[in-house]
Length: 67
Image 1 (cartoon, helix red, strand yellow):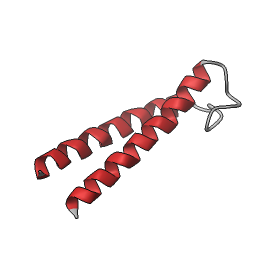
Image 2 (cartoon, one colour; image 1 turned 135 degrees about the vertical axis):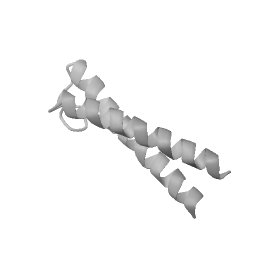
Image 3 (tube, helix red, strand yellow; image 1 turned 30 degrees about the horizontal axis):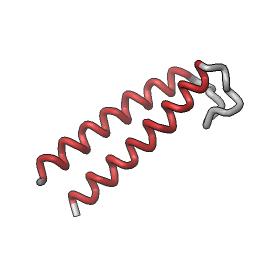
Image 4 (cartoon, rainbow, N blue to C red; image 1 turned 90 degrees about the vertical axis):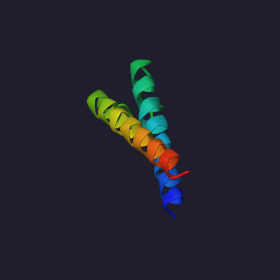
């Protein structure tokens, strides 16, 4: 069960990385209308990218310890 929770949090963090990364990139490219969250706040995008990256690292390292 702990391995499944680690994998679930890893998948969730990857989805957050993709979502906020796409929003940030499309905001920089000038495609605010096509961005997932209309590129409203670059600071929020950067913060969520950092936090999702930290969660991905912690999930992967915990999963690796449980093997």
